[in-house]
Length: 401
Ligand code: CTP
Image: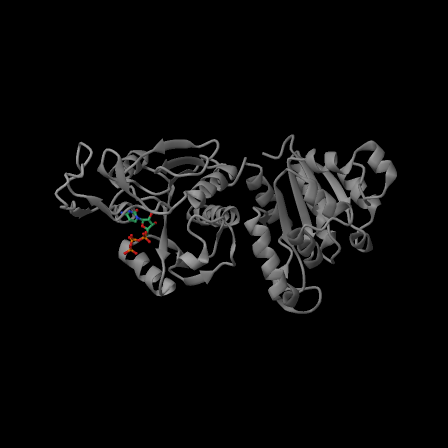
């Protein structure tokens, strides 16, 4: 699995850096080529000579090392690898990454790379638990950065708790998984998206303000992690996602049919804003003003609940069913009862009151409700919500086996 793969290993400055030397050996045992990059701080813990000897490679050390720059520019170096691993990832390095700083070779490579990046955090337990570190972690996960560890246990500083660098065999396993062309490789995932249009007559319809942006971003993020995505979309405004199977529909009934035809899947995300009602007797011809002053009266029928029907399947239910809850009042209370009523595994709740600017906007602020409670995510771009959700889906499917 590692044979022929190139790994750029950025070694941060922490007591756990000594484990990175062993990591070089184990990755090479598996057939990988490892190019080490040392930060200034890491040279307090490991020497360039030992990193170079173990990797059998030139070690890169500083942004302004002109010899290195002449041989291989930092942009090129950052892209020559299949995967960039940061081990140990110190609180400082995580902070730089989360904020896009680039003031030395390591941080510049991390900003310049177009390859997947995995961090292996290692730090004192208080530093790990600090709100700033957790905020940075959330940002990095939102950016699609993979995270391995940290472990819980006795630390070099004498304290106990989470923060210890993952053990080398676990890091090697995580690297292998990351190189599998994305952690969702081999997983088939359904995403519904956009509004539905319910006809009144051939020229008029009832719809809602959904743009399809969030569902599209989710489909893109899942595909970027290697999933085979089936994207069932109503008539949405936004550009369709790349590299996924697309089924275009108009009405809720068509969306139900397309969804059923896409099954079985490993996971399903219902981001569509499905119209709750359709016009019972939609006219086949355009309804005309007849001059009598008599206004048409529309009679409605309830549409099928696609999310509930899939969540409640007795056989062949997807391993993970994720719904959305568009609410304007009592968001958490309503979304929590919606999850139970529909019987999906997770509900992504959002406040779609006009003043939030969420429906049709670029940003989203969600609360993720699972059987272990409600977790509020910070307000962020819909693309970042999508990346973080895709990462969490990937973790959940991995745990399901
Ligand atoms: N949903 C669905 N089929 C429907 C209605 C909703 O699949 N006919 C899905 C949506 O895609 C979303 C979730 O159900 O994942 C919740 O949608 P929402 O509009 O918030 O809830 P409703 O069921 O419509 O309930 P209400 O309008 O009463 O809040």
